[in-house]
Length: 365
Image (tube, rainbow, N blue to C red; front, side, top):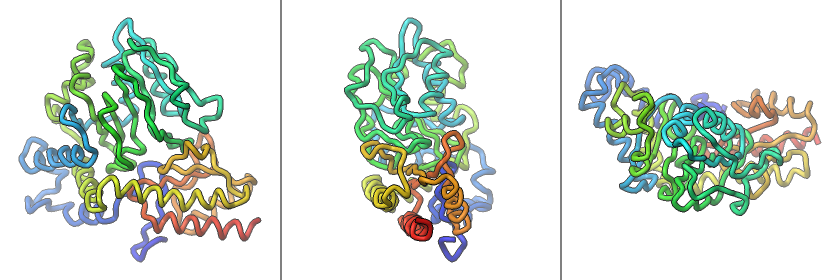
């Protein structure tokens, strides 16, 4: 275990590590929040105490992520998986096409849902290369009259990430940023809509953040259920129905923690350092470990790798678990190993994993 209070080295892909300081603060306030005699989980979402928490979280996210004034920040439910449906339901108009860039399982699932509502097309794909890379910008093909272009900014299963986003001009660019939001600075103005499940970098599971440009709301399909319209939540400040209040409180506390670390720029620098510790071991192992993603497409959030020997790989994972490392198994669909080094994973945990990998190689080479 990594600390004197028996905290694990948590490399889980999601739900994932939360900052210890945030957990301890939530623990201290769990039964009596701000002297109210109630937990934040017990109070009305219509009351001023919760409303202040809610609005402060929105304001803090806008500031930290440099979100322009012409965007709404929404707190929804249903995870990114519901957004796979909500996006085409709202914006894939009849007679239009939407372009999807395939870089892994989650973009495939988004495409599958879009087919239920219209005519999506594949603008680019790295599937033939087993999703080892992000397509080059020159490979992306879409039409100027498309309803939107959709991409997944970071691919948790395959360990790839976009280093540069395409310029889609007047065609709205929509991104699933579930696994790397707030891990590095992003020019939000390039996107018409960004969505992200909170359970990797923003807080606990149960909250989905949507950042949507206001002019896109005007193109929304009106003939869909009320709860599935973005305007419903924009007009109601995400309080149309009961929101996941505790999750939003926790999200706000995580944002305070990010501020205390020096903001997104400082977090990004640390994320590069953390991932580098592990990639350096892989790259200098003479093939004992080998990465899935091509170097130019590597993710700083999800480091995917394998061992040359399958039985030795099983032993590696077993010994790592025994040593206090949690969540290193690759996704069930691809196997192998995966270290998810999200924002709250400390440098010390990545150093400990790098040291373990070096020692394991020495024993078994």
